[in-house]
Length: 258
Ligand SMILES: [Zn+2]
Ligand SMILES: [Zn+2]
Image (cartoon, rainbow, N blue to C red; front, top):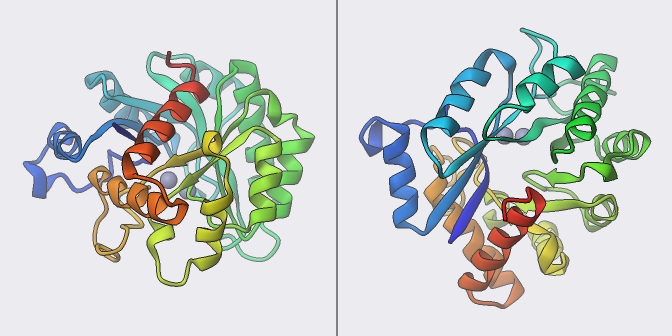
């Protein structure tokens, strides 16, 4: 069985599947995908994200505000801890730094918001979901400064180099591979995928974005995590079942799901 470690089920287009999130999940189950981490990107939609997890035992969720979200409620440690203590909420994020969409050196508010999430995750003892783009040094520096090895977490949609991967793993963060590893120009990332220890890897879709080849550019959905796992198996020279079994075990161990 595979687990999609990062998807946005409230944003996936359900129409092609029969119009409900449950039908999207059933389609994924037919492809061997049996677990889903539904990731929150702003507090305005937390209730929607959470309701999906409460309605289906295959789904867990997170609480957090994305580093590029510029309007709406700014999270505090107290607020994240209150929401993060609720049933089925197993992670804090997605959070991190994005200097690609927030130009230049980023903004102080982005770094402060990131620190707020790390402090909440440590207080709750729940793993972080990290989004980092064009900001790897600051991301790792702030994780270190805040002592994020205490809560650990996931480098989601990983697209950085081996040095960044190993520095993140030193802090106890696992590397989650998305459809990007199937892209033609992602040879450096496939090299990372070859080298990551088997107990430090996960797979995800980040649906509805980042559909893997051969669906690149089309809407993504959790069933397609199979293509990510198959590419990971190919570059590591193992059977897809080995990747499915191992990444599912890694997910369960990180979140202490027994
Ligand atoms: Zn992200
Ligand atoms: Zn995401």
